[in-house]
Image (tube, rainbow over all chains, first blue to last red; front, side):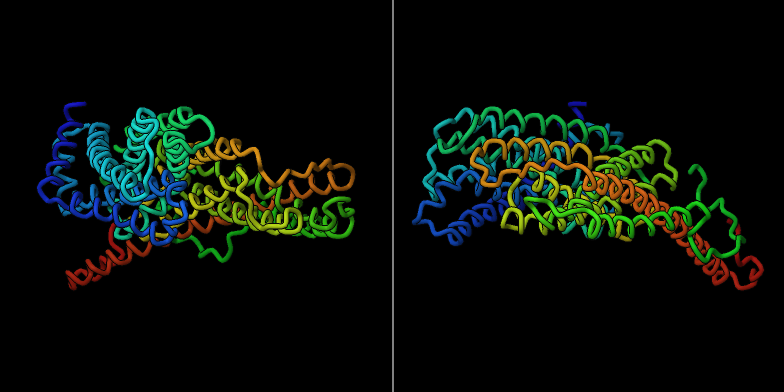
Length: 222
Length: 261
């Protein structure tokens, strides 16, 4: 199963690498969102520095939506879905592969955005280990839930508007947990960052399991 | 619930109403109950010493929120059963329950906000229960959006069933995380007003609770039947269109109109 998952993830990442759509549009978009936040919240009054964690994760979530939609746009061409099914891939492996490809792209994006908030918002990274664990757990959660809801709406003409509506409320706990944990890693949070990180891990495991369970059902031929 | 709409005889007399003796009784009980709750809640029961007349809103608010949970669980259960049995009945039941859950959630949020204004001074506070209910409302709206989308029926049922089943883990993890988030902020400006309720007020609340249940059951049965008839109509139109196409393709075989079912 892991070999199958690696195949799918490799395929998606290779397409992304060759087309440069993800890198060329998603990353500039997310950086642009950071700049827009600065316009909206006057950067000279210290609001940006205090709100860094929240703004960072909102930007990541929006870019994550793009990644999810892109991952399923790749397979929207006629016949691709059928060819994938004929290849005899285990649906659970298919799910893991797609989620892994999204997660890898998101992690790259988070690294760029991390540099962005240090440079633009003068964020002070005090707990690098907590920050790393938070990013990993939150990314797996976003990728798993995103893949599950992405395939759910994949065949529909309204998917571009439906996916955000379905996915964003589901990801609310990720935004909440990741923001609190990052705040405490940046030294201006209340409460224990590691317990929020634990919530993110629970979310990631839960949606990975749900995705592996339901992906096959959602791919069925009618 | 195990038959499919196609098994119903197409020659049956066209239905003019979705009522049956049972639903007429339920409907009569609902009507009488609503009037009774209106009288008990607005006239007979006394105003609260602290909250005065705004306390009367709880006779709508509390039953709505409680039955909302029941409707959400019913939707998730019906979705689960659809995934196992794949029969239209469970799908229509899930859709009907979700609609009722959506309305009750909206009703709960609106009555809560209206009650909050005189009691707390604001329509909305970022209280844990309010926030998680608002997110549940958005989740339900997403479900309705998917339901409204004109897709191939089997595919739509499948997507809706997974979405309906996911409502419970989604709502649970949202509720848990929001609870925790708000728990951190010890400086919550709004303290819950301690309502100890007794006598006629408690009786009114109990009656309104039962009446809300009866109204929901009545709506559910009718919505289920309308949904069921919609399925039959969809299939009937499809059959008629197929027959038309066949007749177009082969004019000599005009007698075959109505074709094999």
